[in-house]
Image (cartoon, rainbow, N blue to C red; front, side, top):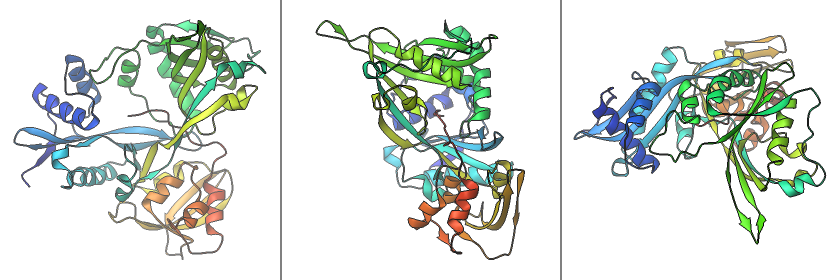
Amino acid sequence: MGVDIRLVEQSDEDLTRWWRARSIGYLSGTQVGEQDLAYLREAMDPSRTWGAFEDGRCVATFRGFTQEVTVPGGRFLASAVVSGVTVSPTHRRRGLLTRMIEPYLRRAKESGDAMSSLIAAEYPIYGRFGYGPATWLTDFRIDTLRAARPGLPAEPDDGGRVVLADLERIGREGPELHERVRRIRHGMVTRPPTWWKRATGEYRLTESVWQEPYCALYLAQDGTVDGLVAYTGREVWKNGVPDSVLDVKDLLAATPAAERALWHYLCSVDWVTTINAPSRAPDDLLPLLVGDARAVTPTACSDHLWLRPLDVPAMLTARSYQAEGAVVLDVQDKDGLASGRFLLEAGPDGASCVPTGRTPDLTLPAAALGSLYLGDESAVRLAALGRLAEERPGAAFAADTLLRTSRRPWCPDIF
């Protein structure tokens, strides 16, 4: 008791206390510089950033804002983001997160956000608040010597070319390219201007060590920027032989030709024997672009974007469906934000989702619907785990026929 939860003011004093508390939680140091404060003033929504204060010290942090998530079919759906969540070790298990997140979600629903999204630093925390993992990421390691033996990714014959670029050009060309890419890949989220300012070094925060990346663009025959890659390198020699490592920071491609060309470029960099390519989609084309798929080794696979339904009809009518069908979903939500029984009737031409009194086909918690929404998770699998109840035989399979997507969703960004 005695902990005051309030909005964070835009004063240097309040921002410093909030950023320092967040940095303690993230183990990223407690120094707060002018660049940090400038970044916070631009990035933070003052109406959606809270701190828990006791005796003048910030002991818990919470940041919210609205982003767009690309849903199957290419539409953008507004989502209330949860970010910057920390609780100081001195104030754990006092319900501070609950006191911040529950009113935030109620306000988000009232303001028209259809769902909430977050990146879960710890897996067990957010399920109890109605979130479920909706996308996954895979880290790959490329052995360039093995990849080169049967042939690098084929260079496209569409007349395009790879050109080197400086960070100023990346800052100019990158945002428009990202907008094009996220229209064709569900799961991706908005990159605000502050994202690009950090990526190009305009903001250099004290919590991270800045290393200027090398950058290249793929230009189509007509000069359109169809791809982008940013990477850093580490020069390594072993017994007089180059054994250098290349770390991919970002790779976006709006066309298959751009994707092939950029991987060909990376695999052709002199002295490099290992390429680390983190935060790729689990079904990334990369392993099959090289002649020896075993030269591309998955080194990690983890959940990434989590979703929490707030407006079930808005969510389910926003996305596309590849098959015709109907299913009655009984969504259970202890907080009452997404509760209800809904009839979803959908097909390639559109969908309707309305409250209904019909007998449910599936009974499921809001978190399970969050996991199913982007088409990556399987209702059959969740039923086997006991995370949803199949009220009609075959209903889980029917739901999968409706909801699953041919490509897996991908969200490479941390926010």
